[in-house]
Image: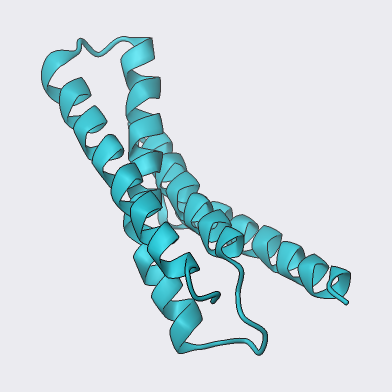
Length: 126
């Protein structure tokens, strides 16, 4: 990863995790369970999961480099995928349709999408 990228990712991770955690706490303890509160909860959960996953993803990219240094937007995009996955899991659980298979299918889809995006990035670079 680029030298200053790790610091910028930490700032983004702390901000996202804080905003998501405070937002979820406010919604859980102070809001009635109406439609806008549910969507707000999904948004805050996605932000929180993204913020928590960013340091781990940055560590994995530093620990296991794939040749060229990884750009911070790649790590941020992968963090957003993790947050989106947790939002999907919460949405499926709310409808009581979360099973191991219904949890695995979105994960495989997001992994395939990220794989195609990484392949496209490799072919675009000179």
